[in-house]
Image (cartoon, rainbow, N blue to C red; front, side, top):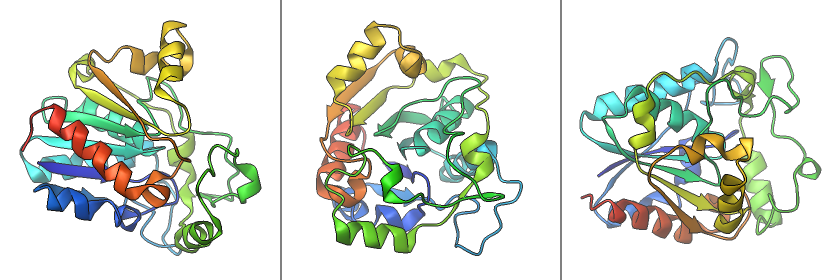
Length: 236
C-alpha cells in the first residue's frame, strides 16, 4: 500500500525518518512529503495558504494513481482531510496522528504568533506540558535545529470542503496527548472541537500515550499503530 505521510507544522519529510523503515519492512511504500514553503528556512512562504498544502497532497495522491492511505500529524490532519474531501474515492483510510479532521470554515491555529509570512517554532514555554511529554532536551534541540517556519497562510487559512463522501472514508485517530476515551466523551457531548470527526462513519481509536510529536518520542510505537490501522482495512 502507498502511504502518504504529511508532517505537522515546522517539519518536512525527514521528520518521518524513524517511522518509514518499519512501514517499508512490512511491504508498504511510504511517501513522506515536504509541503510548499517548508523546503528550507530560506524558502519564501509568501502567498502560501492552506489550500496550497491540500493541493500538494492531492497531487501526490494523483501521481500514485491507485488507492492510498493518508497519514497526517497535528496540523497535517486538517490537510489530509482536505485531500480526503478532494479525492474520497482514492483514499482507503485517513490516519490522524494526535490530530483530527478540520470542518468547513475552520482554521488550524490562528493564535500562533507570526512574523510577516512566517510562523517560527515558538519557545518551549509556549507549549503545554502534555505537548512536551517525552520530548527530552536532546530531542528538543534536534527539533529546533530542523524546524522551518510554517507559512502563516496555512495556520490562519480557512478550510473549505465540498464532498460529503469524505465521511464514508474510514479513519483512525492515534491519540497521544488526549486519551481516546476523552475524545469519545467530547463526541458524546457534541463538542464543536470534534464535530467533523463525529460525522465520519467509521472511526477507530488507538491510544499512544506520549507528547505531541510521537514520530520523535515513540517512533517505533507510532509505526506499529500506523501498520495496525492499515491492516484493519485488509490492505496490501
